[in-house]
Image 1: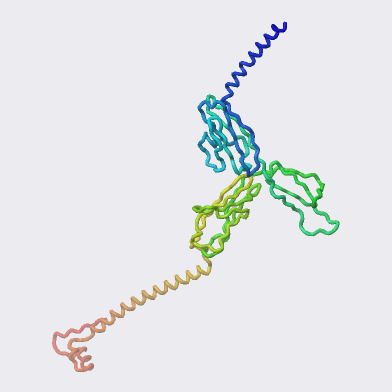
Image 2: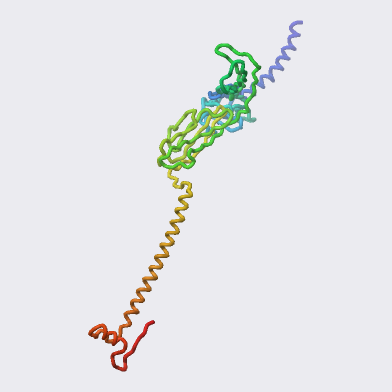
Length: 350
């Protein structure tokens, strides 16, 4: 009785095992990955593996469906993303300096028929910023009351805040936890003074905005390496401007949510200061004086021309034969017609 009853069970096991074996054979070309958790600013490694690659390469894509790597070939120009390992059965990449904006679902694909994919969820934990205490204004008198508030932003998940006085933990109202609406940073460069001139002191302020506020600023000048300044201070100082400082400057503001780069073109040779009222007044006076001098020159030219013509007319009043007169009186008499002869002619010029 035992042997015949065992036969149907064996047949049932064989029927159930055969399709399962076929599925396992088909799944050899299905890639697999794992979910990863990383702290903001750290490095995460994404590994994708497959047993049967069917002469096809593996590919990694980011949450925006942009291709990061296809086999050994880089597709996205992001120096934070590097190739760790590439074989027909594995494609591993690393992402350094991870920001909260890098969180999401990454896809590993293999282009068989049909295309097979695997997902890897990357979770980024935000580091809380330094707590800020508010509500304290001045010294308190005995029996006075005040309310102190402690806030910290940039954490993910929301940070747990604890009050302490020395080593003693204080218990008061329950802590209210609120998730911050984190966003990517932005920045702009503001010069002080707005119109820098050679020899002046110049401050370039990199004004970063976002939640959390950018905590690191990197200053660069196009065409020069390494970076000019890497610090938490956002200002770049020029104690004494000269022409060699001209160029395009970039400021990269970085927070846990990512980075933003702003540009500013500095032209020390700018010769166009804002005109003052006194300089405008002097320009008007100079124009008037120049016009008067021009009129005087024209008047002198006409006066000289008139004097030259008047001198020529005076000389023509001399009559014929006056050169032979022994003295001036005789010359005047001869000029009035004292010489004889019917051919004498008098000319009068008016």
